Length: 220
Image (spheres, rainbow, N blue to C red):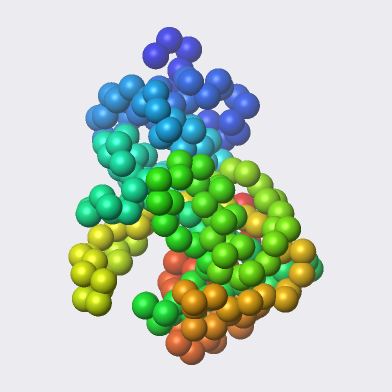
């Protein structure tokens, strides 16, 4: 712990990543885990950098970090309690609309995203899901760091015999080169929407999606 800060920094460059991680792990509900030396490490480091930039979201970040540290197969959907998912806040070329999908199972409007399925590069997961669900290639990463974190309960699904579980969703900010999408088998519909459009959708947009829309229109 020598050299570690006694508080969470406001900007990542103030302290070396290792010191930040050591401090965060030490203060996260009494945990004193060592950083895993496996495919979970890059995500752990990203979470710490996210906390530095978004201290107001520390609670969700700490919950995500606890899950990753305690679950070796956190990227595998076979883990019954929950798993990592990656999603994309995908902007149009003008940057004034974001792409939402009407989820077939949940029947709500959400941003594109999906299961990591063993892929520890969650940014890659978000890009892959955005392309698969929209049919748009050439998507650009506007920021490789975490844009937002959400943890939500997925209800049981009888047809697939899937029990209730948690999605630990890591979101990234992306941009499409055009607005010409193709609706995939996973969606009922797709659409480009402004924030005001999203608030008036029927069926409604997911609450966490509306929070993303607020973040997009009110960057911190």
